[in-house]
Image (cartoon, rainbow, N blue to C red; front, side, top):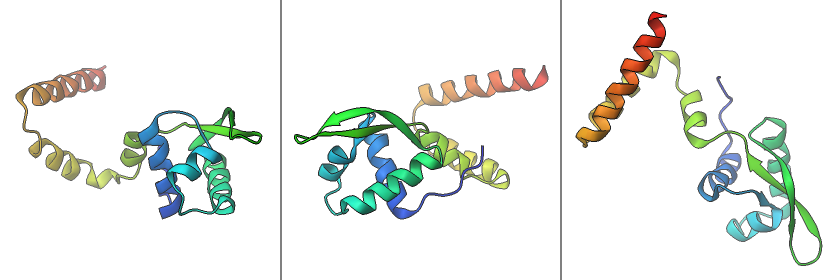
Length: 122
């Protein structure tokens, strides 16, 4: 599925979700990204929710009252893969394969290729 590229602020906030791998609310995010004011962060969270990158999860206690938490719907790998244009797949795969330095990783990749080949032959 092709996705629209994230803006710089959207990507910075999504990177926190990807790195933390847990539901986060405004309070948690503002501790991790203190350079953002709360209004900006709320706007970005709303946009990420509306575009399907995150979804509502629950509440977190910020000391005064509960704030809504969100969890990611799209992991970083799927996002990055969605940005690759079909014409770039072979070129990107070539570069990735050439960067593999472990025989074990290369064997695992070869197994995946064989599985996909069998799937395409069905």
